[in-house]
Length: 478
Image (cartoon, rainbow, N blue to C red):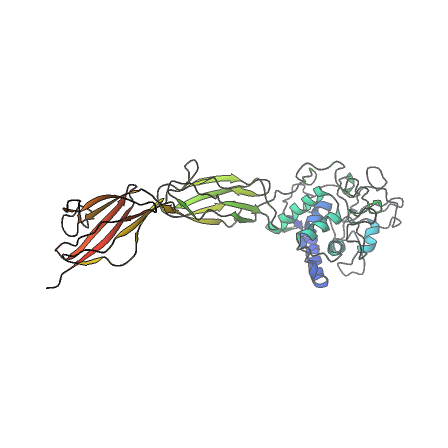
């Protein structure tokens, strides 16, 4: 055996057994939606895939895989139920085979997975199909998270066991599994060493769902090897003390969960004004293929575009570590002084597709004409009313200074064409004005002058926002 075999490797015969069980149940119990990866996760925890695939060509283990003696010494006390047929013990029961069935449980759920006419708990094909039937019993739909967790807890009423199995399940679903030659898979150790991984003991009756024993309704009583409903004295392999936080077992370490998908949780605010901060920060969640949050992974947020938007601190890139629930929130985004569109992209490692947030920086100050009629006047005449409005961050800019000036195409002062009049009636071509409380400014009468042509009127706020209007002077009637 190679104790340091790649975690993704599953011995060929064992992997085939898991997949055949999935196929069989897809036909006989399609509503269950059992996936072979779940059987693989349980098989990995229960026996290290039949001790690294130490099986014959037909899937039978070459050496017995036995749990500890259930004599009440650290485990439940279960008197022999099979006359030693499966576990070789005529006094007490022991969990047997790659999927670690107690003999009395096997009597109910044992199946012939390889169609050889026998039901053998030491045969990986028989054991995998039996485990699948057990997990599906009671009308469970394993595509439902609630039913999935109930099925696993039915196999072992232990939260640490649930976490470990789900971690392996995610691992196999996200990365698949490499088929390796029998006898070369990872071997977590001898099942009789006392590792505390309880075994399945469901009731087949319609009134009791698998994993709910009649004595306490929490996972079985002493008759199925679980004397306290918490997996503390279970007959399967595992440490007698609870595993370390996170569900890790030094004898059978779980693979670190990986992010399979980045999901948008809180979108970036669509707009912000120049000089302001965006109200919302981009937030994503890194999840496994089943939607479980993955902690401790790096998510990088990057700003791209021609605006001056940056993260707090001045950079256009920020890396954030996902929290315990898989969430990562970008720093505050500052709009800067340049208007326009930009994008924030969130990425992580492992070939996961990035997600993007679109945003726009708008000018804090706005200047627009009120009305859209063409500005035309006959030579020697007057233009109609010209009115504009100044806004600040979406609201009216009261008492805002505005300059109105006649200019050339080059932006220089123009001493020809349309003009205003000062208080004494003299022509002037530049005025300083102020908006009303509603942000509007109404220009004084504009006189057309005597020369036909097209002229430009430039309005400018104190913040440098401009608006250019075209004035057309038409030749008067002869």
